[in-house]
Length: 290
Image (cartoon, rainbow, N blue to C red; front, side, top):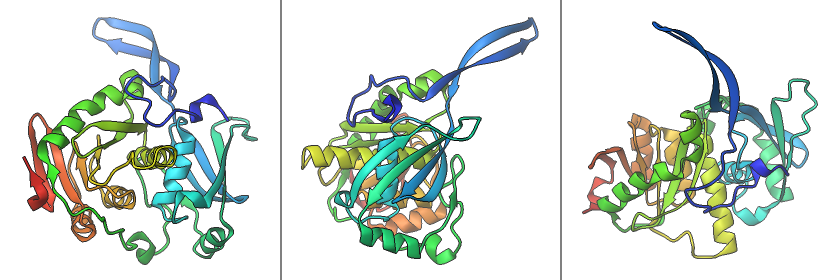
């Protein structure tokens, strides 16, 4: 397994600089031109292979790939619980001459593999796209997980978590092109965050990191925790946040109409435009307290 797939869940704001790559560039200005050594976000094709069968190919940042594979498998309900994922191996020996692809091999429970084969589809993922390749409306609009938490969510906790998130964005500080998703405890303390060029990928990586944290130390991911993201809030983002039991999802940018509808249905608080001491609540606003 490569080091870039090994980042530790809850590693804190310092992190590493994997996920970025150097590229030559030429800057043109009114005063002339200069050659630059630019740091840009790395993006590759990542194939998720279950029990020897390729299921999904997503464009992603090639770090925290074990978390990505685990989180995608959980949030897409390919398995029902982390214990049904038996093994994850990252193979970067791509046979293609351009070397732009990475395969992640997962071994899952036989009954889950049988179910996957019944509904198997090919996902042709693109940056920022979470529903590519879904071949029916019923599959796209699958039932959302009902969030068990029925308590309140503190506004100051949301603002605290969002204010802390930039310190965890070590990749974005280098390349300026990656989204982040973080998990905060009920009081707004961030305990994990993940980054990717795709906002859905970042949330899947976070889901995988949380599953590992909870497995290592049960009770770490406590009820009442919530998700903060640096992107807009789409239907798929709400679906994934609900799948990991988030009490709320808080976004820097706007929500979509379907995201609001699904958040209402799931029982998850949805707030957006969390910036500079203000936020706008779109779903279950009555559950937000000072």
